[in-house]
Length: 365
Image (tube, rainbow, N blue to C red):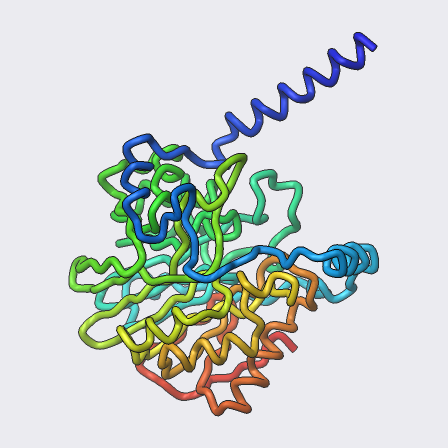
C-alpha cells in the first residue's frame, strides 16, 4: 500500500508539473489584465460569454450514448486514404504578390496579401493540434506549402482564439522574430508573452473594437464559440472573428463559430465583403452551438453579405467524427443551391482577390 501511494503521488506530481511547466499550455493573465477583462461587456463576472446560451456539447443521456457508440464504431473515412496534395509556393509570392491575394494553408490558416501588407490568419502550422504531439492525430498533408524558416518578415499575425488547432506554440517560436505585430482577442496575449513575444508587439481587442494600422482597418467582431488551453483556463480569453479592409477590398474571417445573429450584425455594420473566409468543418449536431453545419456556413455567408465564399476549418486535421471531405461536399452542394459564388483552392494555391466568380476545383475527389 505504501509503494502504491508513493507511486500514485509521484504520478500526480508529474502530471501537475507537466501542466504547470509545459509552455504549450500558454500563459496566465496578470491581475491587472484580469481587471481590464472584467470591464468588457462580454465578461459575465467569471468568464467571457456569448450573449445567447452556447454549449460546447449538448448534454443528454442520448447524446452521451450516441457519442460512445460512434467512437466505438469508428469511421474508415475520418481521414483521407492518401496524403493530400500541396502546391508549393514560389518565392515570387513573397516578393511580388501581384496585387491582393490569399493562400489557404489548410484548416483555418491563411496567408493574406492586402493593401501591400502580408498577414497570417490563425497560422497553426504544426503537425498535430495538441500540446502533446504524439497524440491528437497528424496533419493530412505531409508538408506545408513553404518552410517557415524561408518565410520573410510578416507584417501582422491575427488570431481568432487560443485553441490548439489555431494557436500553436511551435509555430509562434518560429514566427516571433519575423513578425512585426500580433493582433489578438482579449486574453490571448499572455500566451504569446510566455513564448517570447514582446508585449509592445501585441495588441488585444474586444468585440467591436476597431483599429487603423498601416493603411488597413481592422475590426474585432463576435463569434459563437469558447476558449481555453490548460487547466482552469476555460473561457478566460475571448474568441472572435475579424474584419480586414483596405481602400480597395474587404475581407471577413469567421474564426470558429456556431451559427448566430452576430453574422447578420457584422454584415449590416461592415458588409458587403469581397471574400468571406467561413468555417465549415469539425461539426456535429451534438455541438452545433460552437461549430456550424456546412449548410449554416452558407447562410452565415449570406448574412455577412459576402460576394465570394472560401470554406475553411477543414482539410488538415480530424477533430470530429464526420468523413474528412464531408464539409466541402456539403458546403459546395448548398452553395450551388443558393447560387453562391465560391472558391475551393488547393492547399498552397494562390487565389487572386480581384476576381469574384466561382472557382471550383474539386481536387478532394
